Image (cartoon, rainbow, N blue to C red):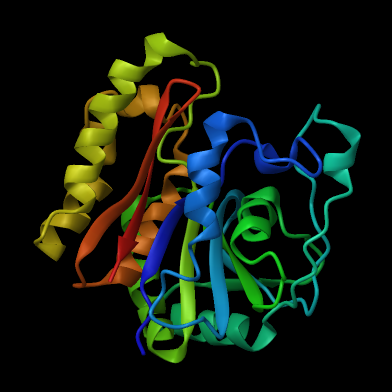
Length: 265
């Protein structure tokens, strides 16, 4: 059965795990609930996950070939217990090799990595979505030029994985401006989110790809993303979605931001 591709929000740092043994701050609960239901809402349980995080960039697309990566605690100034979190899922080296083969066949030079740990764009949302850590996962880097068209094309190259029981996930944030927080942000964040969602859900797949690739022309684009690394995983998910229908399946306000998640297929 063909799985969808997804663009999910991964929150801020270890936001879902700030209070040991308790639910997170109420503002994060809608996002937590969305992530908790992520796997159950699929047509079948994935055999493996290929995830692109907004926290890993390389000169060329690079796949993690490790069998059981450590965690990379790439957030700062959080409580000590948040640096002891565990998500001990197996890696997916066979999937990583398959992804590298598909990207290479599409003309993309592709690297391999063994030593890097899974960053918090991987393990924080996956601790919520796959709490038993029982689905193998391979991480794919972004390309450091953050070219939206190239990342959409890379997603298209990876699309056959969806027919092989693989869930393709872009993990980022649809709004990511850490310097702007509070109620004064929301009107601009709403306008940006409306424009982005209209583009992402355009029923014409060619128009959809073109509109999203030109994201920087949308209202308040650079306000929402002074640097676009948290948006680029959306491009991979969209490309992998191909001609399938696109929908917005999550929207909430966090810190004054409007944050959305999208599903393709």
